Length: 139
Image 1 (cartoon, helix red, strand yellow):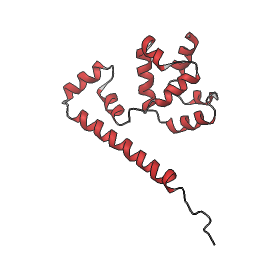
Image 2 (tube, one colour):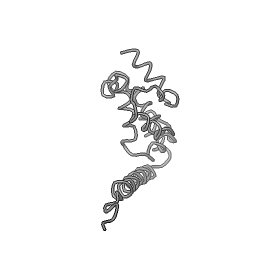
Image 3 (cartoon, helix red, strand yellow):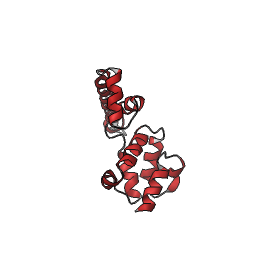
């Protein structure tokens, strides 16, 4: 008699997500270690140069570089291009990326987007909905 499930989906369902979690946290630790190399005055200057507070810069450093990828997909679903916005509305795009990166609803947003990108339910919780809606109207 053969076992019911000879190949349990351990690798794709347990090991792969755990490895991804570990990779993201390793990147965050590296980012924070890099920032810790600067004194507070240098940190303030760096943050100012990119239009952030030092606290926002530290908060962003705790995330991977792809933390705002969902924003690109949301923008595309609304008929907008992140590449074009980088040219025409750079400050707005940077602020939206910051908000998306630190958003507490990222998991819900990803699930809602995967289920139906055109479902307007995301407007209820997205910190960028006003800006995205306004930019979509302007195009």
